[in-house]
Length: 219
Image (tube, rainbow, N blue to C red):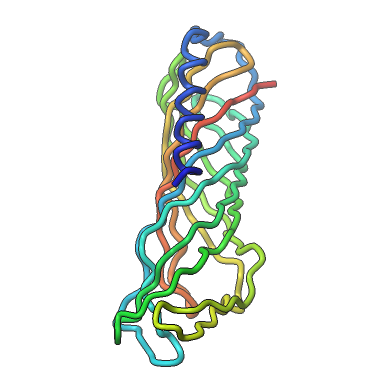
């Protein structure tokens, strides 16, 4: 919780410090840009109690949880508002409480760290000092340090959490945001994205929302 509060306060301070420098964008703005960002990711509940299988899948439902995220992107404006972006973001770990639907036993585990790499098509709706945009694209999501971990449930049973054999999955995202351009080479960007990893033989569909803020530097 303290980590989440620190991230929120940092992003708010960044916005406040950036507003005094907001100016109209120049027509000859550079096409190539780089952006650094940080924020929060909300993963929606996934799985189903109906998938319970004693000794095999004792904790089938993963509740909603929030993690921190940060990353960087590289983009190129193609013209007429369109652009392409290569985006890389890392998602941290947080504590999640799982419940056994057969006896209501619970266990606290650490959610998996992972990173996503996507290629997106962007469209800037307006030009000028304030630039709203929409984007969409796809890529991969990969687990970090995936392995087997041993936990103890509230009832004193040993629970072995084993990561799936497959650690890289297809990912697609849709979103949008706004960029505040306060010089020819720098701006502040606020971004919200819906992310989804489709269902596989190992996992159910995993969905979430990612909200970030950061600086854009143009060349």
